[in-house]
Amino acid sequence: MQPRNTDMATLSLILALPLTFLLGATPPSDAADKARDDLARRLRVDPTTVTLVSESPVTWTDGALGLHRPGELVTKALVAGTLITLHARNTDWIYTSGGNAIRFGGPRVEDASLLYLQQIDGEPNLNGNLVQVSLAGHNPRVLIPAVTEYAAFADGSILATRRTSRSGFDLLCLRPGTGEALRLGGALAYGAMAMDDQGRHWAAVQKTMLGSGWSVALGEVGGQVRSVDLPDGKVVRILWLEGSLRVQLESGWLELADGWQKTGAPFVPADHEFVLNKSQSLDARTETVDGKPVTKVAVVWFTGQEDPIAEVPGLELERCELIAGRWMLLTGVRAGEGVAVVVDVATGLVMPALQGDCQSVHGCRRSPAALLMI
Image 1 (cartoon, rainbow, N blue to C red):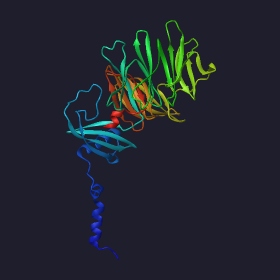
Image 2: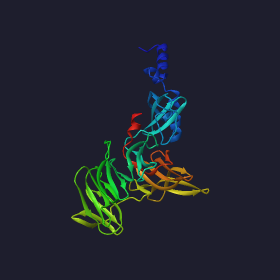
Image 3: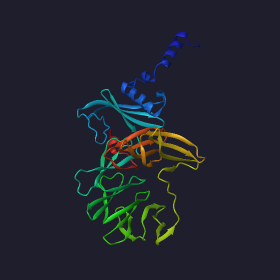
Image 4: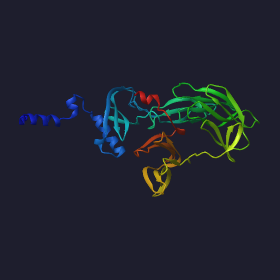
């Protein structure tokens, strides 16, 4: 039996209603709409392609709205607002709101963050705090206090040195999921450091005392430490490769087996070139445009053709680094001040992350817990 015309009209009306009305869900707030439009602008996409994942009420403890920046001065009053998660370009993005303001929190990722050394005023040994922030430069927290130098590795482990006197350093290791760094040893001086991909074996170039030569200290984290003397020559770098330790001297590469053995050079990408596949690589460089510096990031094909990804006006590039295969960290100088900028290779999004009192900025696997808790 055919439905009556009135029934067909009712059905058409129901189908035309928004899904949120049919399910009884609360429609997006004005803050969520503003966040959606802001993200669409940043990613250069149609706002209709940005979807709302969640919006939760939060009372923020201050005017930073849950997204503190290093050194930022904010009001201390409680602020009623929301935590907003949006989805676009295969990624979840964080926003927070309070009052009439919204703040961009960057991507919600668990495998990438930034590390830097923050100066400690009056520190007698000139150490700095090792601080971790999100890729967008939010929610700083001190990982290891009083650090001289550090290196971060693929599994999220960190090796660091701490000056303890004018003639001594401690070597420290912080592993993912642990709250306190473990002391591995001490020496007169340390050089290059390395950790294997599993975060089990470490190595560090060291000078144990005045007048001694350079050697390599190595072992398992928390296990026995042994020392192997190095041949004469400046150490360029050390690394673990397929379970063995390699050392690069100015004269060539050595592998630690039954003593040091000469070996061929492993593949190590250049600082400003990152191979994506057989046909493409990433490149970042500073050019002069209308008399001003502009740092450009592009995909370079094997034919030499370039596909632009992003531009950072005013940035004079000093070094770059690829984090978790997607986020390119650019560090350099802009307007006479040190800065760190993160470029999303997948979307071309540029996120100014750090500026001012930040030294030795590097990428690290794992995001700071503070970001994940907001």
